[in-house]
Image 1 (cartoon, rainbow, N blue to C red):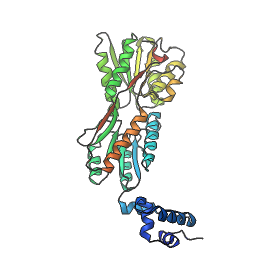
Image 2: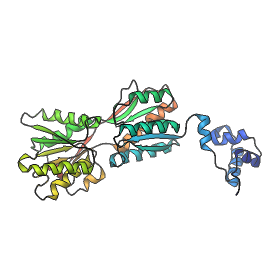
Image 3: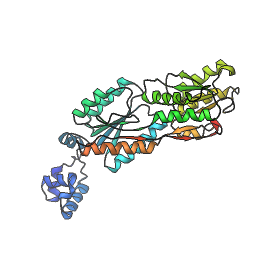
Image 4: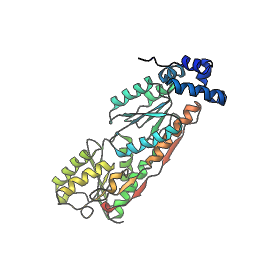
Amino acid sequence: MNRTASIKDVANHASVAVGTVSNVLNYPDRVSQRTKERVLKAIDELGFVRNDAARQLRAGHSRTVGLIVLDVGNPFFTSVVRAAEDAASVHGSAVLLGDSGHDAGREANYIDLFQEQRVQGLLISPVGDVTERLDLLRERGVPTVLVDRLADESRFSSVSVDDDAGGYLAARHLLDTGRRRLGFVGGPTSIRQVSDRLQGAQRAVKEEPDATLEVLTSEGMTVLAGRSVGNMLVERGPEQLPDGIFCANDLLALGVMQSLTMTHTFRIPEDVALIGYDDIDFAVSAVVPLSSIRQPTEALGRTAIELLTEEVESRNATHRAVVFTPELVVRQSTGKA
């Protein structure tokens, strides 16, 4: 078996010092173009592959960014991750992905793992309050940016969407279509995004004296969780069915829609108007195209990397909280306002 070429072999082959090869790999601007070309030619001829693990140990960090999301199976987070990966590649970095699955223990394990991997920074959409853990991480030289969660600017940078405004938009739209018995389907209210969306919906309902809002809890924020809530509503019968339903994300809404339409008993939007949140690709292709609250997923992922890059390049960078405004997208599931 052939021995793997070392940096010393490259130096000998190119008739330069080992330090010169190191500069070509790490600080190419310090080396003349002619010498650089000679070293690169030697690297190519010998098939040299740099030991990045060793470089990371010397530098104290890697060229990777850790990203922890709540549910990688949700197309919303998939889009955010893709945008973050594209933005990171521009800076010569790669993204390591962790899926917490709404589990605080699993989230903690990923935080520890990424620290062991010496990531240059962490992006996280947290399950609950992880402030103390993230403070400790920062003290150890790993800056953190919260994603899809507003942070206290004195502690962390963050990029998020105004979910209170989004919840208001959704409920206000149902009210504007004449609906008065509203239902809110969401996952655990311990998830900040869910509680903020509910708060916005409650604010809109308070504007109409004859309107009500029933909170319909679900075990999760998946299609199956939505179907479970939908089945419960079907069992209630038409008289006790809300005439307008706002779901905390599109997956829940699609599940509710499946349950209501499969019985051929309830019509959407004639009997019940339905609106989701996130505006994932599946929303427009649903059996009844789903109205939704659109979040700028590409901007979220891209901005998260930009904020983290600022903090990596300058440990004294000012923390920033970037908040985007959501947008109402009306389709057939709610009819026309």
